[in-house]
Image: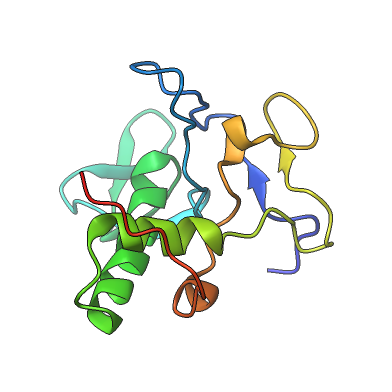
Length: 144
């Protein structure tokens, strides 16, 4: 809260293009994935005091793709709820065409790992924007 500039592409983020097929631009977009408060397995250590005392918790602060994925999945589920007739490519299109390539200072999103500013190979179309995705204006509805 109040951090400027934000959003950044984290140094640990995957980068494109697709390793399987380099002509496919990846990632599609970026989502929150750093310092996310998330549910945690209570019988696993969440922190330690010294070397001997392991602390458990129902929650933990985590980062990584495993934290960004639930954000993006929830936006996709929200869109499917509002537009039940949309197929996955329409949902992906709405999320991509409304993603924001600018940070909260209205400058291009930075890549904390490699270069400034981030390129589409680092951030895709930008940072996911759930509110804009609800009214994308235009979607690309492509079936296989």
